[in-house]
Amino acid sequence: MNYNCNCSRTNYLDHNYTYWEDREITSDEFEIINFLEKSYDLRSKSILHIGIGNSFFAKKFFKNQIFGITISQKEIDLAYSLGLPNYKVLLCDKYSLNFKEELNHMSFDLIVDTNLKSYSCCQVSFDFYMENLFHKLNKKGTLITSQNGMIWYKTLKPKLSFNFRNFFHFKLKEVEGNKENVLSHKELKSLAGQFNLEFSFDDKLCYLKK
Ligand SMILES: C[S@@+](CC[C@H](N)C(=O)[O-])C[C@H]1O[C@@H](n2cnc3c(N)ncnc32)[C@H](O)[C@@H]1O
Image (cartoon, rainbow, N blue to C red; front, top):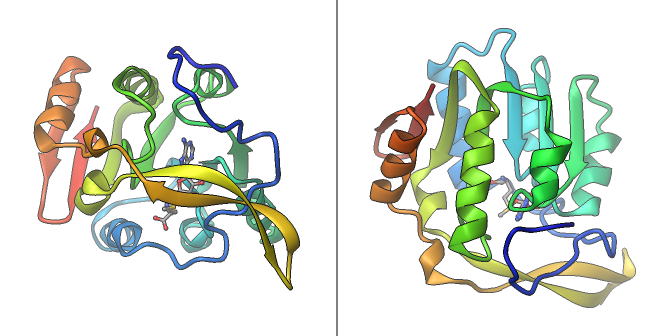
């Protein structure tokens, strides 16, 4: 994948990495699902889900068209094994130039990314991602993120691992991340302003509306 910064990084296309496919949905994303179920009209809305994890989100909203992004091939294998007809997924680093290219002609009514900045390599890549993401929003579209997800940060390191189910396999291991990846309200609000989006929040989530 290509980037507009020179940070050293893992090439997620190198191996069939395992990451979140066997883990529980985070409570942060669960809060977003709760909000969508209770307070959001999802009828015929197209959704971009960044960070598909175990695809719990896609199973919940299987009637909607969902396009998912992940850096783990094993998460993709799980996603397709579910056989959901409206669900497509792509192996792509959201901070890369490829993200912009691969989603070139796509736009969405709703974007969900629980961890907007959590895995960013640097500010340049994060700003580039946010600009791309905002351009993917349809008119009146909404981007939703989690307040807890905003303060969570990790770096993913490749690791050769062994267990009796997968034998030798490559996994993405979370190690201490960059504290600058804590995304403040101030920064998110300022980004929203830059791209003419309406910013609001409650005790759990942040909303950016076009
Ligand atoms: C902590 S898991 C959370 C999964 C799910 N969103 C949830 O909250 O339960 C983070 C997710 O983000 C994805 N991810 C991490 N870094 C990414 C990146 N740079 N580009 C795209 N997806 C990424 C991982 O593959 C994984 O699906």
